[in-house]
Image 1 (tube, rainbow, N blue to C red):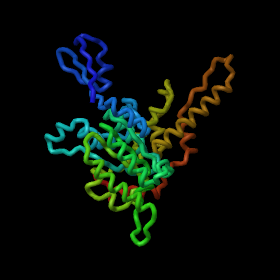
Image 2 (image 1 turned 180 degrees about the vertical axis):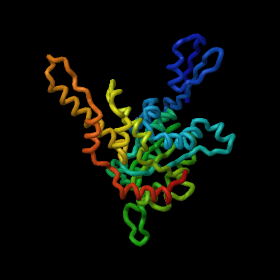
Image 3 (image 1 turned 90 degrees about the vertical axis):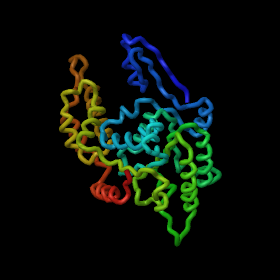
Image 4 (image 1 turned 120 degrees about the vertical axis):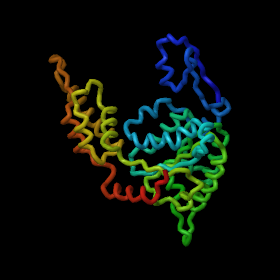
Amino acid sequence: MFRLSALLPQSENRLKAFRNSDYTGEIPLWYFDRQVPVHRSSLEPLTSLGGALLPRDLWKRLAGMADEKALIESRLIDPLAHADLAEEYGVHPPRAVVLFGPPGTGKTSFARAIASRLGWPFVELHPSRLASDAAGLAGALRARFLDIAELEHAVVFIDEVDEVAARRDAARPTQSHSVTNELLKSIPAFREREGRLLICATNFIRHLDDALLRHGRFDYVIPIGLPDLEARKAMWRRYLPKGAAHIDVDTLAQSSERFSPADIEFAARKAAQRAFDAAMQCDDSTGRRVTPQTAAYVDAIRHTRPTVSETTLTEFQADIRSYARI
């Protein structure tokens, strides 16, 4: 870990930029200090793993989902970012968590935002790509975890983890059993080191092998559901164009019930494209501009099919009762 610091007079008028970049200050002189947990020696293995350092503002850009953000901040980010204080209170920083929920609810965005918030490198393991490795999926998974062990800090993300840890049938062993067994062995070894977090995501938590979800492997099993009304308002504000104060955000949020974040983005882009096409067809000599209206966005919502069906939503509520551990 290396440290970036800045010493400024208290009268300096550019303090806000430092505060927004996760520096902390002390009065009467503003001494700004920021932890950057990456060693130069970590860059080579990080590159070989296809990992990256993400922009620092992804957490702030995660629109809405206030309840989920508050939970993740409390359970994951704070204990990891303030490990000494957590230890003082007997709180064990998490080593591995599962995010589950319907498709398109932002599980990948949350994983990336957590890495951004911590300032740790982000490494995503893609089961489909690992399967093409000459060593086979189990061998490739083992090799990746050994490589990850060389990193000082890392957020490791496995999306659609059910592809590599599906429920096993003892009566009919298959080749996938060895992959599940390898992951079950890799997680305890991963948990032995500080400064790393494994995040697994799945749309179908009921398909995961029972052994994977036992206590001791994952600290938390966190549901990520559809955005509520306030979250939908925040998401619509994010996707509306500048100067769109005339658009009724409340109407859009109410009209897009059962929309996932991905659905809202799609509907917003659809309405924006239609307004753009209309503007391109206008006679420039008139100097008129086509301004997107609330009705155009409502129409786009009406013609967007929600990703999450009522049946899926009912199953998700049942999964929360059966599997969530927060």
